Amino acid sequence: VQLQASGGGKVQAGESLTLSCVASGRTFSMAWFRQAPGKPREFVGTIMWSDGTYYVDSVKGRFTISADTAKNTVYLQINSLKPEDTAVYFCAAVTNEYSGGYTPESYDYWGQGTQVTVSS
Image (cartoon, rainbow, N blue to C red; front, side, top):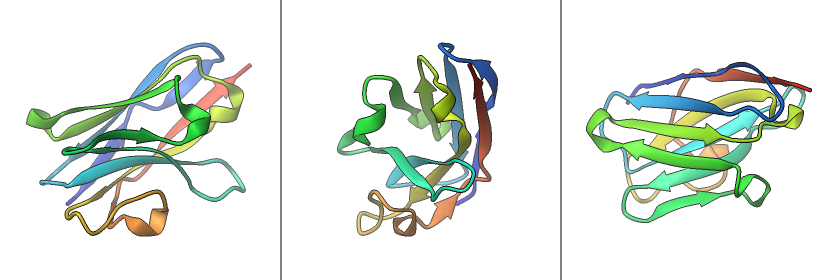
């Protein structure tokens, strides 16, 4: 499975952005991670087709993951962007129920990342 992430950019604090991730094949679940300079890759949220969405507590209320299954695409909408949201955002996927979770090591497939830069 190949993943293609897009939608990043440079925005002002308070603005919104929607990232997209297109999968080339069937997946069991997909997730978003982010990595700020000098920091480890951080789990943001995941969507499991049979079980809904889950988010890390720090982004609940501002981040929304949704999907268009017909297009094999997952979206990450980020509202009220803050400078601390600046990072490279990655989408990830697994193709079976035995993988996936909250750690990068749990995912088998990764997109190339899309940069989000938020200025104050």
